[in-house]
Amino acid sequence: MDIARGIDGVFERGDSERFTGEVWLRSTVAAPDGTNLGVVHFAPGARTHWHRHPGGQFLYGIAGRGRVRSRGDAGHVLEPGDVVWVAPGEWHFHGGAPDAPLVHLAVNGGGPPEWGELVTDEEYGEGFPA
Image (cartoon, rainbow, N blue to C red; front, side):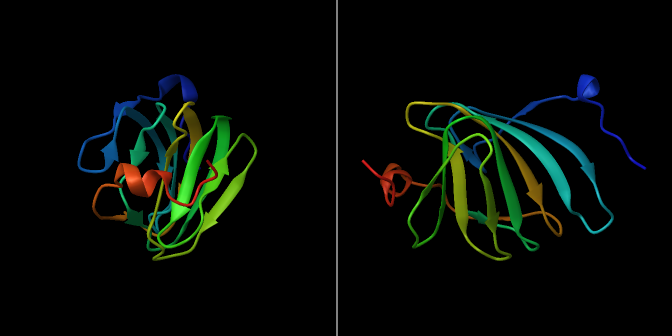
C-alpha cells in the first residue's frame, strides 16, 4: 500500500511549457503502470496546453468552475461533482473559467502525457456558450 498524506503534500507551480496562467499542481501516488492522481488548482483563465494521455484521463471537479474541451468538439463547463472521461490519445485541454478558478482531481492513465502547443485565447473560447 502506498499512501500520500494530504498534510505532507507539496504544490508546485505549473511551468510555461505545459500551462498558460497561474496553475498549481500536487502529485500523489503512481501505480506501476504509470497511472496517477494529481490535484490541480487553476486561476481564472489559466489552462493546460493541448495534450493527450496514453491511458486516458478522468477529471473530477472539486471547487469553482472550469472548462474542458477536446480538439474539434464542443466544450464542457466543469463544475463541482462533474466527472469527465477523456479517451486515450484524445487531444484536449482543461482549466479555469474566464471568471472563476477551478480545482480538480486528475486521474492520468498509463504514464506521462504528450504535450502539444498552447491553447490560444480563441481556442479557449471556442465551443463554449457565450
